[in-house]
Amino acid sequence: MGLEEQLPGGFVLSTVESLAGYFRKGSLWPATFGLACCAIEMMATTAGRYDLARFGMEAFRASPRQADLMIVAGRVSQKMAPVLRQIYDQMAEPKWVLAMGVCASSGGMFNNYAIVQGVDHVVPVDIYLPGCPPRPEMLLNAILELHDQIQQMPLGVHRDEAIRAAEAAALSAPATIEMKGLLR
Ligand code: SF4
Image (cartoon, rainbow, N blue to C red; front, side):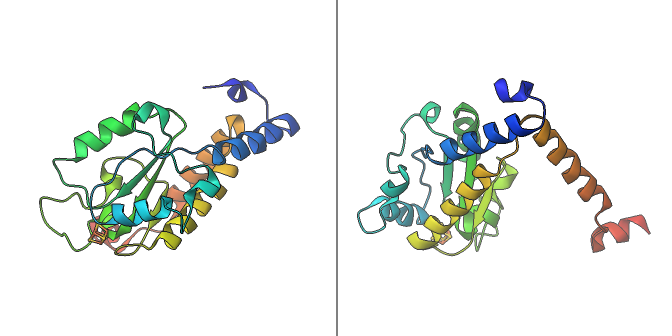
């Protein structure tokens, strides 16, 4: 909770929002966290050819307390899930999670009891990146999409309004086929 939480909606809050979004997206530091083959592509993204440094993000932090972006690069085993959650909990707020690759997003081809079927069972995910493995260009594109999300992040009363609107939309959404079966 910061000063922006105390501000009433209006011009001042909108200005603070856009400034906070601008500075937050320009100061993202990823946590050092590679799980499987996707991590090789993530490492390639930081090298000279793709140059993640153009966004000031080349310094992957060894301490979660200095990181605000977790790139989950690779499949998450059941054994690793509590460790991943602990690292996420130790990261500073506000923080974001990028699920890189089909394995992190949904379990991918590892449809078995040893692999978590999507890292969103363990931590909230802000952006999903498909592919096996996604190329560095795709990771760069996902990072740019995340920058847009961060730039438009509502604060204070605007965030409360956004949460209420999302809840209302979820409640008014048509029932899925499975739910219809249960309601019958
Ligand atoms: S998506 Fe493909 S490259 Fe990435 S961890 Fe899974 S198997 Fe490996």
